[in-house]
Image (spheres, rainbow, N blue to C red):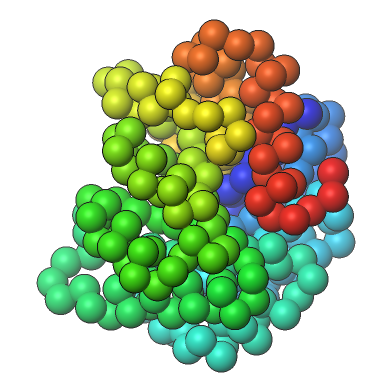
Length: 258
C-alpha cells in the first residue's frame, strides 16, 4: 500500500471517471493507494475542496495559501487558524517561497511564509514547504521562526544534499515527486540515494508533474507507484520496502493512525 503525501484532488481531471469523484476513489482503492493528503493553495477554493473530500476517511487535508497566489485573500493568522479547525486538517500549507514565478519586492511572500509557520506552531501541525529558487531564504526563515518545533515536509524536492541535510536538521522530511523519474535530475537522484529511510515521503503533486511514462499529461495519485518504483531502483531495495517506510513515515509525521 502506498500514500500520496501531496496532491490537489479538487483540480484533477475526472473525465476518465465520468466526472464522478467517487468513481475515482474506487480506482484509488483498487490500485492500493492507502491514503491521500489533499493540499490547500488558497482560501477561496478551500471550502469546496473540503466538501469534496470530507466523507472519505482515507483523505486528509491541509490549510494554506501558496506563495504564488496573489489574486485572492492574503490570509491573516487568525483566518488560517479558523480554517484549520476541521478535524481533517493535519498540516499547514503549502507555504514557502518561490522566486521563479514571482518577481519584484517579495517581502509579502516572506511575511506570508512566516505567518504560516506561526500558525503551524500555534496548532502543533507540520508545515508543507514549497521552495523554488529560494533555498537560502527558505532555510533562513525556517531557522529564524523556529520551525523545527513542528517540522514538516519539503515537498516536491528539487534541491541538493546540503539543503536536504539542513532541512532534516530542522525536523523536516523530504518528499520526492515524479521529477525524480525525469532525465537530467542526477542531483535529486543522488539525494534520494543518500536519504535515511525514516525521512522519505513520496507524492504526485497531481494534477501536475506526471512521472515518466506520463510526463506532459494530467497526473493522478495512482501514479505515485512510479515514484516509489524509481526510488526502489535508486536505493537498490524492493518497492515493498519503499512502500512500508514511506507509509510509516507519513503516519508518524502527521500523527495519524494507519
